[in-house]
Length: 92
Image 1 (tube, rainbow, N blue to C red):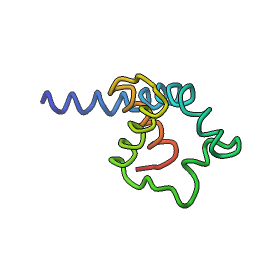
Image 2: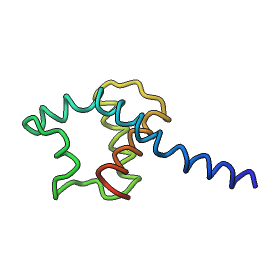
Image 3: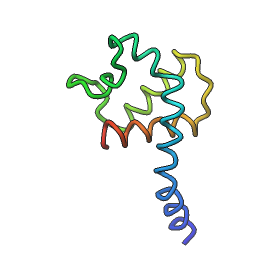
Image 4: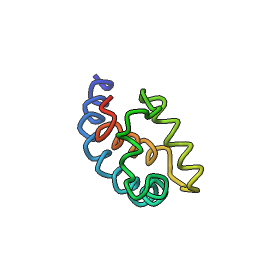
């Protein structure tokens, strides 16, 4: 029963996590991505040859980018960014 309640809370909080993840992403990632893509940062996620094909790879990529950008996100904040990207761009 406790597991079921925990699962329900997690499912209900997913949209909130994605919304918070967008703010974290936009403040920490857009400038770098924009410089790499000629001012079109979201093409990092929508291009046909992107390398991120699974949730695990996305989690690793976000963690690596956070280190490269010298962002001190908590594990929960990183997961918020992952959820935002998964929901908005990757759909897995």
